[in-house]
Image 1: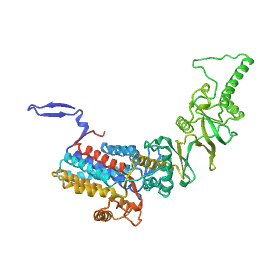
Image 2: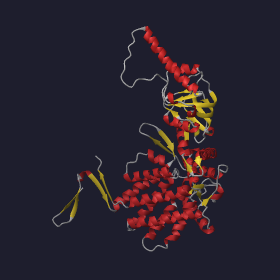
Image 3: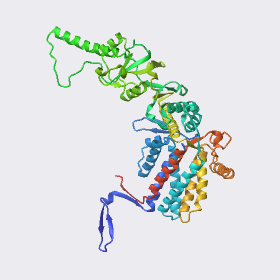
Length: 535
């Protein structure tokens, strides 16, 4: 872009290839941006809550994904509009930070944009709307802290954590056995958590899936599963008190790094070479036996001769194990990864109470279970399901539940779900609006209306009368001054979310409001969109 002046000294902009660009400015640009944001929010609105609908997404290469996880839907939807991309980023950042609430945050942003559009039509300046939203979000976040509750839990008392994870899982496909999955998730997090430092490393929890069986067969393994079997069919299928050598060097004679040529012109020389190779193999296997290893896990393959020798020497082995799995096995068994045979010592061996090979169904699929490890800080959640899509969706649901459990260990404050927190914040923001003179109070009131959109969507998706249900719950909250009343999505017969045990994490809710407000402020501040025209 270049700036030029006409004969009266007025500046005008010269655009490069101006005829090939489309340009929206002023109120038109804002309205177009708001329309794009609302369109994305409308897609996700129907998948909010326990009765939310799922979406089928087909990728260009024909892979089908069925999900109602907001972040996944937006990731897989090939969004072209630049404002819609902002909402995709918004959902992703909620997923990275909190792990749950990815749909709610987009619905919230869509509602704020909708309210902003009305205010813009009234002639209020977008910056004043953005400032009003900022004030209102501060009031809402402070009010959330005010209505939140802390609860105590320990390694022995995990019920509060399980209840919160069940709330997360109730909106997923897997909600028929949410209790079972929530318990698995919480036990996994407690197993790897450092409760003194209030820290959880989710990398220690490996989530594996295998098609077959039913969802109820999902299990938590205090150890590692590897999708491999023993290298020789006649090796023992179960080893107790295993001492594991974890190797990243191949079971084969060393190759010189430089170019080399071996000339063999007599039978004797060939014989010598063969004996030499055999000696190499012998030494390698003997080295493993000498340090006391009863199982070898190797990152590379080995040929039939080595395999035969290992079998003869009664040393079970597993080959072609990936690098990440090797690291997890090393962490779980307390072993060290050994890059050279010369460095093998008894201290570097990992220890596991039981290593067993388990086969599934009639498909000859085998997996190795490494259990009762010396250091049980690495666990595996092993998911079974009817088809691949089900397993993928269960993995995403379990990821959400693990994140919720982790957030609660970091900060054990909760608010009640079912839209009760939003309704309560809406009432508080509405009441605070009168204290602000000037145009901002319109924006603050609009923010309060936008907060109502989450419980409204919950009621709508549950097949209730949205406006009627919302106003009934709102008046109940004001009358009893009780912030625990929400939308009764599951038709339990009570609006009190305390009795229904519907919890959400405080930091998750706060993050939702803050992120949605930030993105909406950003969208409102855009007043000129210059884009290359379509050819």
